[in-house]
Amino acid sequence: MTDMRQMVFDWFGGAGPAADTVSESPKPPELAKPAGEYVPAEPIASLLSRAHFTHPRANREIVFEKARVAYEFRRGKRRTIGLTIGTEGLVVSAPRWTPLAEVETMLREKERWIIAKLGDARERHDRMESARIEWRDGASIPFLGEQVILVLDPRQRHGRGGAVLETGAESLPGVPRLTLHVGLPNSATPEQLRDTTQAWLMRQARRIFTARLDHFAPQLGVQWQKLSLSSAGTRWGSASADGSIRLNWRLVHFSESIIDYVVVHELAHLREMNHGPRFWAHVESVMPDYAERRGELKDEAVPTW
Image (cartoon, rainbow, N blue to C red; front, side, top):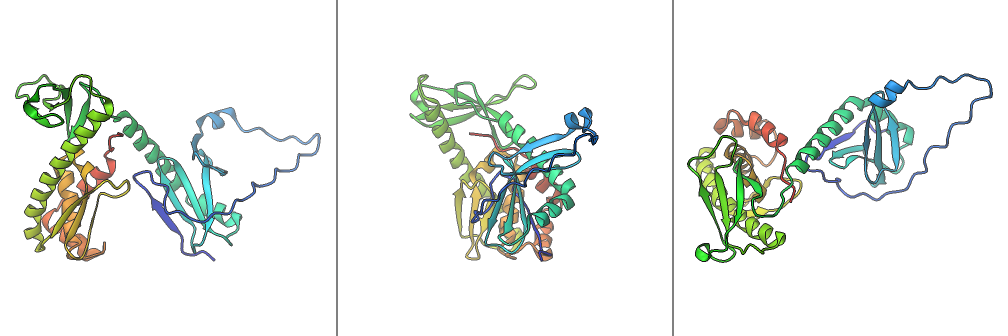
């Protein structure tokens, strides 16, 4: 009944679209084996080697050969079974009338895909945690693919609450050459440093994005009309038929080559409002290595603020 099945991988850890849910009772426990009947235990080595993935709102579980997955199960007004994998884990959404046995059959059919994507999501989460920013004097943030050291600078030449990026022409190998002097007192709170740094990053984002839009638009034969910065958690950009472009300001954490890919991607939508072959042909016409850059974007970890 559910020949059409949907798989969605949320690279940014979102829980997917909300759905009306109906709580399902767990499967009844199996009847005890008759006394005297030998039931072989699962080898300890198998138990220890099996990966475990647990969603924080898990209400069902499935055991695969190489993984035990506790997932969030939802029922709602939908026509297909949907799988969403994010940093929290696996979410399974199903129509109200779909039997649990059919859901489990699909999960076993997609076992390799599920385990691979859960592993990718866990690795990405670990990278994001390792990139968590500590808002203090001397901390570092990524800017255009390079690490920048934050320096509290109580001098007023930058203006209170302002910031200036300074470049150290000579720096030791492995030591960041960029410092961001923030016009705040040494007693500034982490929140003050975070907000001032974010304001500076957003100003840089608008400046850089505008320049790259102006650079690539003529090559694609389009005109953009308006640039808006977004803080969306699940998408890097969007384009409207009226020429409006929205770009996530957090892209300034990444290298210019990745920024250029997202800019070209959105500008190409002004030619084709879809992801069909003609759309990708437009992208490739100005960026032959777009697939490589797209892969780099997927592998990037957004710093946790």
